[in-house]
Image (cartoon, rainbow, N blue to C red; front, side):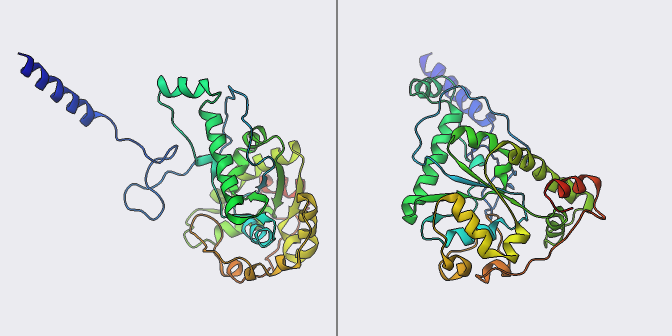
Length: 298
């Protein structure tokens, strides 16, 4: 009887395991990594994330990181390359910290972490902080800049996690952003859809600009007067300006990875290239004209 009961329990366990949904090994996203075979990765939502802060913040290894708040297709990769050519500044590829998450098993894991003063949110902040710290250790530099466009959706969380963080804001004429989206090889979306995508970044960007202290620069100024603009940025970051920044290709010897930043020929040239510019708000849809006016393009 005992043997029969043992066999029944084993079959029941195997049945439960067979019916159980497959484990998701990619944290907050489902699917596989870019370039891998299997289900396609689900991109994180283009919206501001609401987070409940239940525990105090832990001490940070990186006290004052720099976050570049910018929409997609705004020239943020160019600014990152210029900054990364500085002897004291590490500006790596897009880190996508907001997609790096943890999952605590209810019960033991949650209780154990809470005894350490950690919940899921703060544990994620600790991991993000460690990632930034590792970049500084590897590079031998002392200022780290993260330029991921998705930062616009978590700017409030970044400010909470790092009260002493610095924020750079990079603007580009709204039509410049939409036009760049339109010119992507894989683009099949309508102009209206592309404007909607751009505005999903514009709205939280403008909210962050109005709320946080920081430095705002414009892509058009960066390409037209790179020395003046990079001098302003360096002064804000508290580092001396270096002429070698303008010839960033001579110092940056890294691979350009798909989905982690711009890989165009202009970027690969290693020097600042003249940019296609737009002016005024004429001919823009009302929603784009609103941001053009707010950003001084009208």
